[in-house]
Length: 507
Ligand SMILES: [Zn+2]
Ligand SMILES: [Zn+2]
Image (cartoon, rainbow, N blue to C red):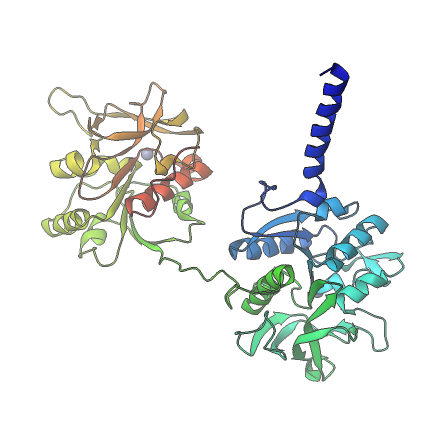
């Protein structure tokens, strides 16, 4: 083969590869940047007389939390092309602003026409109507643009100067009633729900709109005295469109009726069917949250400690402010994991028995920071259960352990273990301990080279009857507020309770 022919062949192969990767070739498999099996949603935002800076993240969170969607946000829709949209199955409009220009508008029309979905929220049916374009917080702009007729066809009902003029009475509480309960979005839902929101009245409705829900606009509140359309659908080409007048702000969007109808509608618009529950989430069996007893007392600590458990919906914690309060009763029925952040020496025989029976029952134990100095004279506790001890005073020829505050620490995982799978090398300032007794059978999870430390900063105790983890880190705010520290503590808790799969290993 001569060089020209080889060149031509290479050219052909590359061209074929590029063609496969082009917009028309998008498939779930060819898009590793999306989560497999999830509906791909693009939210248009970035201009609104409403507070899109808070509402758009909320809409995204509702969809992501449902378990059904992978969501991206476009805060500058102007310039979006068909290639941008090709990867998505449904567009959500949290947008009320100027027009997008021919290319983008045509791309959106074709997107829906070809069988994809469109969801328009609240003020999105004020946009593109020919009314004055409003700035942030309803500030007048004096700008008027010609309406976008295809958009109005698509959304099926919009703001007009009338008569009658579209408007809303002051925000108040009202009831939204479903008038079609056989539609996939509404099937199986209660027949009505209550909201605090703006009740839009007198939109100009297209005969193509199919109303799913209405609300009575009470004249006593300045309303029209009519049942106003609130949620409706439109078939545009092969596409499915749903508009909801609800969702003035995040408070209105938090209403369970909004969450449910929005999440279900987005699934329906994308796929034609609804698998989400009435709560707007995938009906997968949810395990009850782990019940933690967090024990403090005997040592001061900053209240940032409490934030360590934030964001973990599978962890519920109660607080005992002393070891006596914690262990006065049998704990086994009420708790799954003990989290010790106390500094205690005195313990009665009854309290000892309760603590011991909890540990021997195979429950989880996470010992944090200064709790490594608990019960200096209870050998079973520090030797067998914790696998380590901070020596408060010299023992025989062994001197007392030492501590140093505010040390710069580079902390690296040393074991391929589920507890440290989510964290890389951490870097923050915290207290170090040195001269501790550490069981030779402890499995060290984290280590630092800082010479003021013994080195190991977290370990799994060799104790056999239950899972026990010690984490030395956590003296102060720098640790408590460090994202990977929170992941570490939360995952240690989950692991001690058997809730963290062994397959979850380091990247
Ligand atoms: Zn509003
Ligand atoms: Zn400390």
